[in-house]
Amino acid sequence: MFSDRARIHVQAGRGGDGALSFRREKYVPKGGPDGGDGGRGGDVLLVADPDLRDLSRFRRERAFKGGRGGHGSGSGKHGADGERVELPVPVGTQVFDDDGNLVVDLAHAGAQAVLGRGGSGGRGNRQFATPTRQTPRFAEIGTPGEEAEFDLRLKLLADAALVGLPNAGKSSLLSRISNAKPKVADYPFTTLEPVLGTVDAPDGRQLTVADVPGLIEGASEGVGLGHEFLAHLERAQLLVHVIDAAAGDPAEQFLTIDHELAEYGAGLETRPQVVVLNKVDLLRSPPSLRLDDERIVALFAVSCATREGIPEFRRALFDLVPPLAGPAPAESAMADFLVYRPVPRARPFKILRTDRGFRVTGRAPEGEELEEALRAAGAKTGDEVELGDEVLEFQ
Ligand SMILES: Nc1nc2c(ncn2[C@@H]2O[C@H](COP(=O)(O)OP(=O)(O)OP(=O)(O)O)[C@@H](O)[C@H]2O)c(=O)[nH]1
Ligand SMILES: [Mg+2]
Image (cartoon, rainbow, N blue to C red; front, side, top):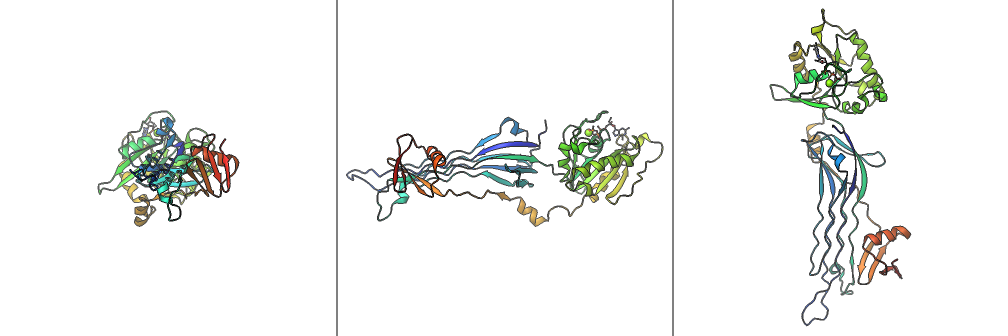
């Protein structure tokens, strides 16, 4: 089943701890500090993949963890960086944070978004040696990776989208002009999920056309299937309004759909529209649309059954999709490499590991928050915690 929404939990990897270690050499009772640094925690990121069509993989799995950074060790050995987790998503995926703010829009193939940044590795005691402190008896522990929930929402990116009442012949039209093979049947709501088709022109140009489930009166309030899918129309530059010309007054059918688009909002009601009067094979005289509307940029009479008018419509589509409405070339090239990164939230304090426990420096938090941070750092009951001038015992 097509899936255009998902909620995921992201936990980036924790940074590895720096090592507390001293060189051991023959005949030297105590060598210098040689504890290496911990590795960085693994990031969790999304990558826009042009081969994917929906977000259904997130139904099976919704929690993603970056790998933990390795701990540093003696002889100055650096811990390994944690494994980064790359999640492929379809192009057109938008990411919202817990407050509903759009954080990134993966509108181009290859665009990336780091949703959780891995923690940094702690410095080993070797790094803390100074001329006046030659045997630093502490090392830094790694910081936690970022953790958050995100809502993913897919909005199809199509040049044109077919809209209309159920049974109007939208899927039939798509199958006539594109490589797509949507299901066609003589009952409403045959199409239950959006289908994308590619239309090829002899000169090599390509257009993508989306067929979405039929809309009915009340769709914008959630009647039928329509509302879920109206969002997919938002990104289409051109709306192709398909009307069954044999099913009553075309103008009336047009207004029913137009009302739903206006109710939905998001600018759908101002989009240029092409009207396709379908099923003309069932009519004795040519159909007409008695409507004077400046948004209607073209009108076609076709039959998906006999293919009358189809080649003309198909050719005209290439002229009708606004060629300049997309991003300018320079901008789109940039967007291919667009990488979103959350602003790092620096911790205002540090936890160091000492040979008897831990030392907290900087603006240490109080109470539970401190306890939590220490526990995450590996503190156990009985460990000594140095806090400013105080020495406490971890409970
Ligand atoms: N006679 C005739 N029948 C057509 C024509 N176009 C489509 N049909 C028939 O109309 C019915 C509905 O066609 P679909 O393409 O499934 O319509 P749809 O708009 O995609 O319908 P939903 O997916 O339910 O919204 C089918 O039985 C088609 O065979 C046409 O030009 N002439
Ligand atoms: Mg259909």
